View 1 (cartoon, each protein chain N blue to C red):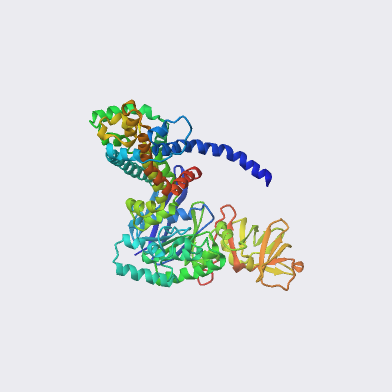
View 2 (view 1 turned 90 degrees about the horizontal axis):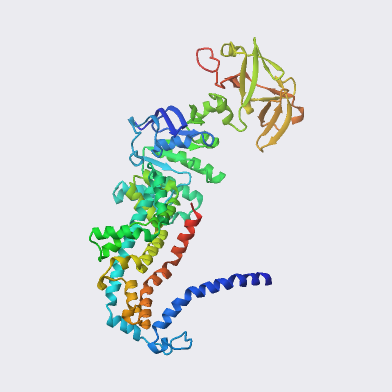
Length: 364
Length: 275
C-alpha cells in the first residue's frame, strides 16, 4: 500500500507553530491537491512528505511505515520543484538520468525509461540541450520527465505550473492528469490556484494558517464547503456570505424577510443568527418581487457571463453571476435563491452546520 | 559631448598615472634583465637595453641551481594550493549545506582570522614547527597554511549562490553529501574555484617572509628567497642577474593570471554583490 498518512503532525520553527496538528490520509494512486493562500503551510506539508523538512511532532506514515527519520533519498519520492531545479551544467538527458545513475540501474533500463518518458512528454530531440537553451514550458516538461523516469510510487509537485503562461498551463494540466493515468502514483500537488486544484484533483485539501480546513472531492468543496473560509476561498467571485437573523420560521437578510424552508427547520433549530452562503451563479436576478431586494452597484462583463454586484440595504454586497444578457442591470430589483442551493454556517465559528436530510434518510 | 570628454580626461589622468606607477618596476625589471653591467650603471636615463643581451639569463641558468629553486617553489606552492582549496571548498560546503549548532558563531570566528596580522602568528607557528622538527623542510612552510579564512569565505559566498532546490533535488534523487558536492556543487562553482586556486597559487609562489624563517639551507630555498641572494652584499649586487631571476620568477604567475583573468575578476565582483 503506497498511501500516506498524517497522524497529529506538527511543524514548529522555534516557538512558532506553522503546521497545527495535521490528521489526514492520502490513498494509494490518488491525486490530492493541497490548496490554500500563501503562507498557509501547504508547501511545508509537501516538504515534510519529501523529508526536506523535519517533523516536529506526530508521525508520518508512508506505505504503512513511519518515515519521520527517513532521509529524503530513501523515501522513493519523485518531486517537481516550482522553479524546476534542473541542473544547469547537465544536458536534458543527463538531468533525466541523474537519479537513475545513483540508483545504479543498468544502462539498458535507464535508456528505455528515459526514452519512454521523453516521448510521452514530447521532448525527443532535445536530449543534448542544456536547460538554458529551453523555453519555460520545455524546462517544466524536463522536470516532469526527471520525476517520472524514477517511476516512484509517490509523486510530489510544488506549484509546477506557476511559471507558465495561461495557455501552456492549461495544456500542462491535461498532460499531468494523463501522466498520472499512465503511472498511477500517489500524487500530491501543491497550488494556490483554485482552477488547477479543481481540474487536477480527485480530492482537495484546503489549508489555512497551518490548519487543514477541509479535505473532500472538488464537487463537495465547491458545493458543500466545511466553513466560511473554504466558501470564500473557492470560486470567483466567491460564495456570498450573508449574515441573517432567524425568528420562528423566518429569516431576516438586510431588511428582507424570507420564509424558512421547512426542510431546514431541524438543521437551524435553536439558532438566532446564522451565515447564509449562496454561490453567485445560484442567485437568481429578479425584476419583480425578489426574495431579497437590493440595488445593482456594479456590473462586470466577462464575455461569457456577467457578474453583478448588488448592494443590500444594510450595505452588504452580493455577487450574482448570470449568463442572461437580456435583463438589463437597471431593471433588477434584487435576487432570489432556492433553498437547496444554500449552505448555512454557524454565526460565530463559521463552521458549516450541515444540510437537511432528505426523506429516505439520505443526504440531499 | 565636449564636457563628457573633458570629464573623462580628468578621470583618466590619475588612473593612467596609477597604472604607470604600478607598471614602472616591472618595465624596469624587464629592461634591466636584458642589459649588461655597463648599461645598468650609466649616468643617463636609458629605459631600453641597447643592445639587449641574454648573458644574464645564461648566467642564471648555468651558474645557479635555478631549477632546484623552481622545483622547491613549485612543490610548496602546489601543495599549499591543493590543501587550501580542498579545505576551503569542504568547509564552505559544510557551512552552507549542514545546519548545526553554533554555525554562525564558528563562521564569524573564522572571519576574525582575516584581521589577525601575520606577524602575530609567526611566533607560535615557528615554535610549533620547531617542536614538530619541521624547520628547514618544505613541510614546515606548508603545514601552517593548509586552511585559509578568505578562501572559505569566498567559496561559501559562491556556494550560497546555488539555488537550494538544486541541492534538494539531488538529495531526493538519492545523492549523498559527497555526491551532491561532486556532482552538483563543484561543477557549478568551477569558475570561482579556479580563480581562488590561482589566487592561492600566486600568493604562495610569491611568499617571502614565512619561508625565510623556516628554510635555512640554500638548497631548500624558494625563488623569492633565492632572489635575495643576488641583491645582498654576498652576491655583490648583480642587478642584471637579479632582475633576470625576478623575471623568470614572475613568468608563471603572470601567465596563470593572464589565462584565468576572467574567472578571477568575476569571483571578486561576485563576492561583493552577493551576500
